[in-house]
Image (cartoon, rainbow, N blue to C red; front, side, top):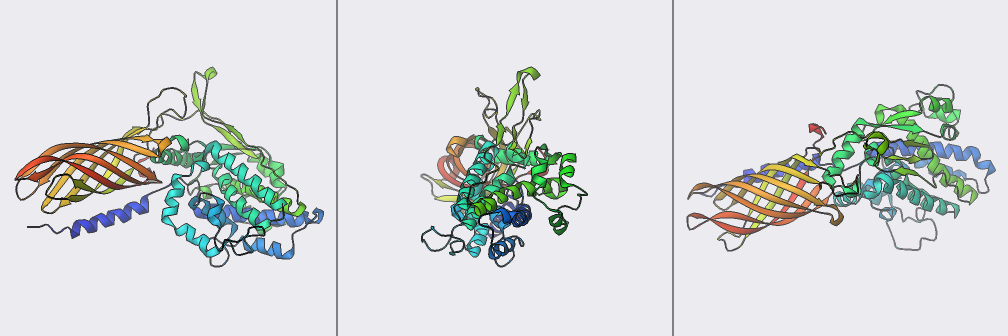
Length: 492
């Protein structure tokens, strides 16, 4: 009797949807957090530019000021996209070029005013799931010194555009840089060696540091405070609710702040203030450059010293020192030992057999990472244990009248420079059919490429099929799709 596969298919589809909802990527802050900080910063910078415009050669016009204020309204509302949305959408893009939409005409004049920036297309970028996966996989420039260097580079380009009289294009490019600037306030982005780590290992370390936080030192409180007038503070009571008296004195008194990421920005009003003021300084550079037609750049350099050991302290490993002239994270003794965060995964796949009466069979099953290591090559420039993950799981397979249940074990070794991972697979499978029930061992290997927390792979396995009433070994080629959840519920 043929088994009806539809109930199993429905369960597999439910598991797929569940895993997609829990799959994560390494974002420093949530979309709404990026949006709110950026819109607050644009309001502060616009008011600052108005106050200082009398000294400018090309002061902002009433139309330009209205346009700037119109880009500070809401996150995700209908109508023009806000500056905050531009900043937040960088998690779904790989360069400012992804923001451009419309006819391919000359960019000699302002592309925003010419319609090359399409608000509808920008919002569709957020809903583009595939683009988001590619961006998550290729987000090395959101981390550590690469993130700071990328911010400084995009900000320099934006300042040059503004000095050339192209305000809106400058703001759009600067929005890309401001996302990276905001990422630099998330400890998980400064302490995670993204380019050296497998996607899953990077997410684990990123989540750990963002959850527990790191201390940040404000180094230029007076310069940040000068951006905000008393009237501006009154107009933004939510942001400055805890500030009484001088803002500069407040920043000096709260010069050391525990910074966090991943939806925890609301836990610290001090972090919100410092982030908004620093981003406001970035935007003010654009507005001042535009009004004076001369480049004004407050972020021409950055501070960076990576993971390092100090011999005077018995070789203790220290975290990176990183920041800008307005503040920085100081080096601290690193917690340890670092290890992979246990994570849940769902595998969907198919097997195609050589010389077998059935051509193929499909399979589905969960896996959980039960051990592993992120390696140490990103810390010590010596031969060290490689990154690896140890996964245990269950696989259900179905083809015609044959079903099987397997306990699986995989050892995964990332090849980060090639954007691949290779794994060795062992299976103990129970085969069930109308002819017999038997258990056999199988083995194989697999190559996979990751896109964020989604992995696509091909491989070869040695499995068994019933042929002539007996289980006989057969070679199968495999294709698979793995969806990985963060697994932060198991801790770090």
